[in-house]
Image 1 (cartoon, one colour):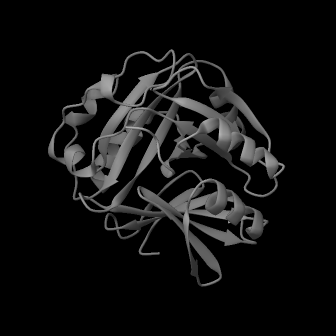
Image 2 (cartoon, rainbow, N blue to C red):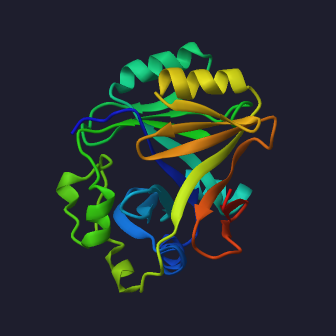
Length: 255
C-alpha cells in the first residue's frame, strides 16, 4: 500500500519509552504498533483510540549520545516532532522549500520508509517529518483485536534492528481505551501554516473559534494563530479526568 497524504503521528522525546508506554497503556488503553532500535535511539509507536476513532503517538528514547540526548538535556521530556506521510516525497520536499522552509536529512533509498525533515523555524518551532512508505499499519480494529505484529509488513527505518524490543509491553494490563483528538500547534503565521498543511500536505480545513482544524484520515491538528509556538498538547476523550502530561505537553480531556 502506497503512502497517501496523512498525519502519521505526534512524537515525544522521553528518557524511558517502555515506562511511559506502560503508563499510557494502563491509563489510556494504548496499543503498541511497532518499534525499532537505531544507532542513537529506539522508538515505539502506539495507537490510542477505539476501532472507530483515535490517533498514533511515538515515544523516542536515546540509546547513546546524540541528537536526542542533546534535546532532552536542553528541553527535558516533551514533544519532539510531527510526522506526515505523502505519496511523493521528492515532490513534497520541493514544494515545502518553495515556501522558504529548510528541509534536511532526505533519504530516498528505502521504500519501507523514505524521509526528510523540515527544521524548526519561527513559525511552528517544531520539527516536521515528511515520509513515504510502500507499507502500511494494520487498521485500528486489527491492532485492538490481536497482539500479532509482523515487522516485515510494517514501515521500517533503514538500518533499524530489534523490531520487537518492546514486546514485554503486552504484559501490562490495559485500561479502558481513551481516544486521542487533535494535536494542538501554535503558529506565528496562519497563512503559511494553511499553505503547508492544506495545499502541500493535503489536509481538510475547518474553522474553529479563532483557530482551525486540519484533518487527515488518521488524525488531526488544531492550529492556534498567535499562541505559544510549537506543540502544546493533545485533546483526550476518556481516560483520567485530570488528563496527563509528557513534559510541557498536556493531554487535556474534552477540548
